[in-house]
Amino acid sequence: MFNLLRVIFTACLLAFSSLSTAITVEAQGQSMIFDGDLDSARRNAIRNASQQAALQASVFVSSTQKVTDGVLSIDNMQIKTLGQVNDIEIIDEVIRNQTLHVRIRANVEYEADCKNGTRSQGYMKSLAITAFPLLTPTQAILGSLENIQSGFSTQLTNDINENTSLTARNAGLLTMHPELLTAPSRQLSAGAISTVLQEIQQLDVQYVVSGVIRDMTMHDPDTIALKRNILVDFYNRQDYRSKRHLRNLVVDVFIHDGFSGALLFNKQYVMAGRWNLAPEAKIGFASAAYWKQDYGTQTRLLISQITDDIQTELRCKPFAASITQTDGNFIWFNAGSQAGINVGDRLSVYRKSSFYTNGLSENVQLTNTQSSITVTDVQPFFSVGRLTQEGSTYNIQPDDVVITH
Image (tube, rainbow, N blue to C red):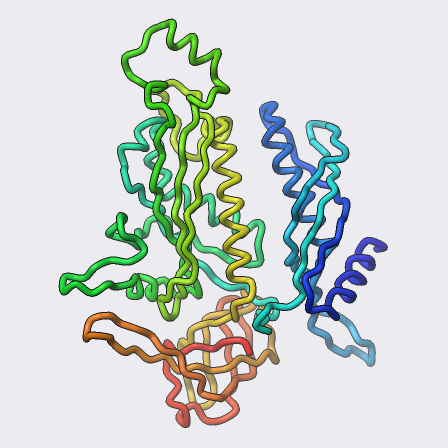
């Protein structure tokens, strides 16, 4: 109880400040040790402790209040962390009953308000994570990693859902970029440059994350040459920590707005990890053998970095959802209790329209109708709101959008 009060007190102090704040905290984390893999357990325990540190340093408490028999009560509480944990130092580590416990000291940087004043009010923005195709598929033959094209999106989806306030859907079987060399753009037959707008709109989410795996080669190709002998194999086994065994993983990540198709984020991630398996080994991506490799460990860290960057990029973006049905001054939209919508919430209504540049490239414009809705009914995956004026006044139609104030 004392810890919760301390957390809430910290949140109240930070809520009155719009400046970036950095504080040093200590926190504990733990993780089970599987198959003697202490490194993976330590990584997971540190991540758990980092989340606890962020929770202590920067907490938002949002609640729905009601009065029952004259008593003010809280019927819903959400606690979300928005802190960036840096300079992590392990100050204690102990193993109890196959569980690794760590205590860390870390600096947590916290920004109370978004620079543009926009807040998501605790709503969970929806993402679709599409496939990460290989620019050069033959590079996946080593280790039989061809399934990385859909498997990478699966791992990223899981990491986002477990460690952020976003809700991600796995669309790993959908390839957004038919021309990988020039992704995220493509050239039409008439010469114009097009985006992935049409492909994005069918996913019916607020944001779409996609990407391309650019490189999976070994630093030293001779390390896995087919013409080897017993002495070479013996040397490689003894020299497994050498940089000769490093293998690249270069990934481009794109974030598109799900309503306009606009490219919001474009970043290339480069990592390398040791690959110590025999050239003929066929383990597949995300298998137990894959994660035991240093290459697998570095892949996890890479996915964690991508997750953190996506959270940072989208944190201050407004929440939005598509309108699915209208009836007089009532509007249905495709976000409900699963997204944090509550009865009484108010959202602005935007009309969505398309126009074409040069008669070829489609563009989407969102126009503020200067009207809002008040939510009157909430279901798990959709909600109903009442317009302040008749919907016919603004010609509100399905596929228009509601956005947080």
